[in-house]
Structures are given as structure tokens and as C-alpha cells.
Image (cartoon, rainbow, N blue to C red; front, side, top):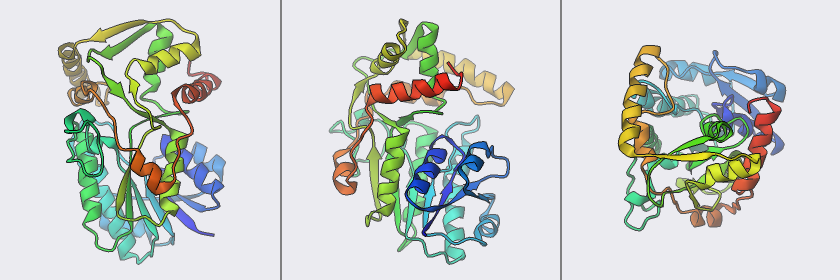
Length: 329
């Protein structure tokens, strides 16, 4: 039986990866920090590996007792009050992990790095209006810049069998960021950025984890793949579909970018006091004002044989059922 090490295994995407990897017949090593909540992982009956990303030596010691055939490096930081943490977690931790694998002489078949569409930025910054592997990256957030820098670090290793997966906005059962849109719809008031003809892309977590495993088992190496459900939606479509599925009416309030910047400034000031990240900050406004996040899915479909299965309405129903079952809505 082949073995797969999955980092960030206790998170939203990580837990689903563990489930699908087990269904694929893999022995799963669920890599987590000692402070992680293990409730879901323990119920899946996987082997827990405690990792310490602090530096190369601690990481090497963490992995020394284990052997594995594949790595899915899913662990990462998506929000913080200190932008320097993005580099520390998303870039340096990735380097420590790879160095530890090589130092321990673990002959892996594939290293799947879960990057992000944010590493390349919105498609309205591209001459042809589409983000692809040939595009010049234009990340607009510190998170995106850290993911791009991490990709560059991975590419520096010669003869290393890496592959990049760059998902757009991911939603599904257990997701917490887009969950806020569900909450707004239920409240009867939905706030969005006032951007004319704004378009968005989404991918359900089940489709994302499916393509990750396809990429891992494929013969393709040293390549990158963008992942969406294959569709482009008007930004208004997401709350509209949620309202339809929830049978809820709401009032849409479009907020000018200058007002969002003011709110973000206040929000950041509060974060400095509470020491906790908030949903909106000045960096995030750069994403809110982007006009489109279209990316090249044809290459992903042709290269990996990946066909998206879950379009928005189906995915929203699935997600809503989870929220209701868990008394979150």
C-alpha cells in the first residue's frame, strides 16, 4: 500500500483530502501541529504525524521516523494581522518541508503544492483577460505574493517531482470565509463591492480534492494547474443562488471601494487591539475590487482528465445542508 503525507490535514480542505486519499486506497499520514484540533481526523482512523516547521532541524526530526510515496502540502496561512507571517508560513515552511524530505532521503514520487489563483492575481490584469501558465503573475495581496514566492522556492530544486494546484475561491461543507455570504443572505442584507460587471469563479471542495489526487497520480511533473468548476459567474450569482436554495429574500447593498477602504482601515485598527484577523482589511480590498478571476481550465481538463462535477447551485445545496445539520444557520 502506498503512503501519502498530507500537511494541514485537520483543515477544511485537508480533512476532505484525507477522506478521498483513504478512499483511493492510500495509507494516510496526517501531518498536523501539536496544537491542532484532531476530532475529525481521529474519527477517520488515520495515522497522526506531529510536525514542527520552526526550522530545518525540527522539521527533519519530525519526518525522520516515516517513509511515504507522495506529499500533498496543503498547510498554509490565509489570514493574519502581521503580513510577515505569510512569508514565514507559506514560503519558509515549504522550504523546511522539502529540505527535510531530501535530507531524510525519502524517495517521493510526487510533491503536490497547494498554491492559489491568488498567486497570479485577477484576470483583468492580464492582456487577454485570462490567467494561464504563460501569464505574468500579478498578485494583489500579501497572501498571493507569498504563494507565488513559495512556488519559486519549489522550482529551485532540481529533479524534484513537484506539481502546483492553484484553486480559485473554494467553498463547501465546513468552509468558513464564504460562509459569511450564507449568513448575510439569512440576515436579509448582502453587502458587496460596487464594481461594474464583476465576475467570479468558484470550485467545490469535492471537485478540488478530486483534481488534486488526479494530479498526484498522473505522470505529469513540474507543471501547474488552475482549478475552478469551469464556469464564470457574476459576483451577484453567489448570493442569488444561496437565496434561491434557502428560499430567502434579501436586500443587496453595493458598497463603493472608497467606503470599503475606510471600513478596512477601521477593521485593521481593531485587529491590532484584539490581535485577531478580521474578514476585511486593506489588502483584502484589492481582491474585492478585481473585475474578474477567469483562468485557463482547458489545460487542466486536457492534461489531467479532470471534469468538474459540481456546479454552483448543486454545491450550494450541499453546503447549506451541512450548515443546517450542524446548526450553523
